[in-house]
Amino acid sequence: MGWGRAFRHGRRGLSWTKDGAGGQPTWRRWQSHLAAGSTWWFTTSWASTTVTGSSTWLVAAAWRSSWHICAGAVCSGIDASQRLVAVARDRNPSADIRVGDMHALPWGDATFDVVTSFRGVWGTTADVVGEIRRVLVPGGRVGLTVWGHLKASPGFWVMAPFALAAAPEVEHQAGMLALGRPGAGEELLARHGFVDIERIDVPFVAEFADPDIYVRAMASTGPGYEAIQNVGEAAFADAATNEAIAHIRDGLPLRAEIALVGYLARTPGAR
Image 1 (cartoon, rainbow, N blue to C red):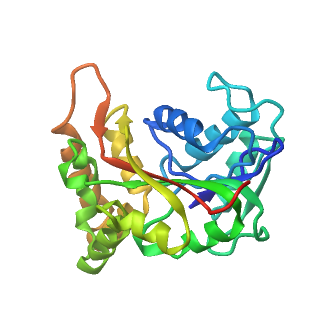
Image 2: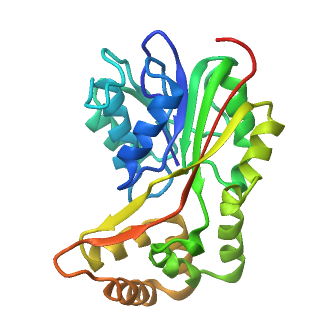
């Protein structure tokens, strides 16, 4: 799970992400609500896109990009994986990026103006919202995204291989998705003292150049690993390949539109 405090420019913020092909619309939507000119924190949790997501957002914060986020930013970040931290440091040599755990943030109370999480907080790790609340200043803002109604998504097919995991693991996967259910995220945020809570739908698309890339991407995820542990690498690869072949588009990449839900809220008080 990747983390990254993205930029410090007068105000401070915190976030964790899981970015993908739909990242630009997500960023633009969040920028309009969460205020540029803050220190941001990013986390990512889908192994195939973790580094791309976290380092891309760090770069976007560090440079004055086409999204006009902030100029002269000082970036820092944290990730649970030493390998991903090494890649992020390579891509962002001026950033302070460390290995760490979102359940024990190495920052004091009321440190950040903005906290965001992009598929980094799950129904099975909902207690992390308490840490978010702790490090936010009065009037600080939070933005979270979680999976929405996956089975109703036209791109749900990309996750079909995950069902090859053992029954307890599949049940755990379902628990991870709990925050996308109607009212779940709102209740969680309110319970931890957030106000002005808003739920929005966020455009999200995953794309893969070909079936081989899709299989490798799915195998690199946590649920993919669990499926491989249960049925073996060959069986997983065969199932994922067949799934991809069924969705090939002539001359175009594999494409999956997936329901993504966003939550916006703030802490009480004035910043």
